[in-house]
Length: 210
Ligand SMILES: C[S@@+](CC[C@H](N)C(=O)[O-])C[C@H]1O[C@@H](n2cnc3c(N)ncnc32)[C@H](O)[C@@H]1O
Image (cartoon, rainbow, N blue to C red; front, side, top):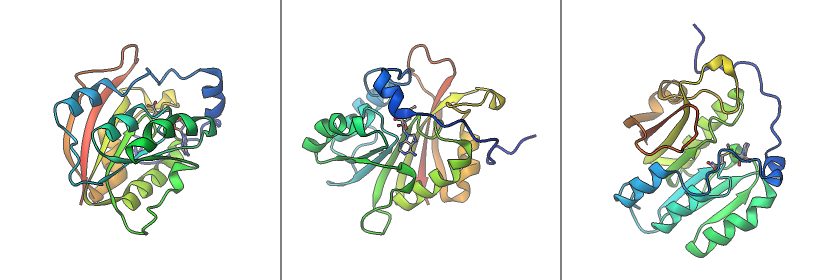
């Protein structure tokens, strides 16, 4: 049996900027994920203290980042596509957040210390090459303060690993294998409100940084 924590062969490179330039963005349904919308509306992921920071790597057009910023998170949204910068910043900056252009996997807190209270992933971890997953783990652990939360909207759950990607197969056992004891699973369930037309499962997993 293959080890879910280990990379398989590298993907051919994806030209993400070209996808946005062509409007070929099937992962983007034009709003925050419906599960996130419902949960925020129910008072989940409330800002723990004024000024608490959230990180959204691979934010795309920033729908999820903006939804978090609207309830008071100071959001840093990361993506590598220059054409998204103005769009995402026009929503985030008035709410105290920002879009940072560059390789999300290289981001580190300016303070040099983990000072982020929430990392939110939605189709970034499944989009990067399998060989880059350890860098994603490093990013989350560099960012999150002890007690901070990592929320992952896992997709595509149940996609055969051999089918390749992106999006690559992702499920909670893979995330647990990647993070080991650094994170503790608090909550895990299939989403009640999924994005229509998604071929594979979507699960909501919430972890806390030990
Ligand atoms: C499948 S899209 C998901 C976008 C967004 N999370 C959403 O749900 O609409 C993956 C995103 O990750 C970005 N991305 C991929 N690799 C990246 C990297 N190394 N650094 C920053 N962004 C990256 C792409 O540009 C793209 O916007």
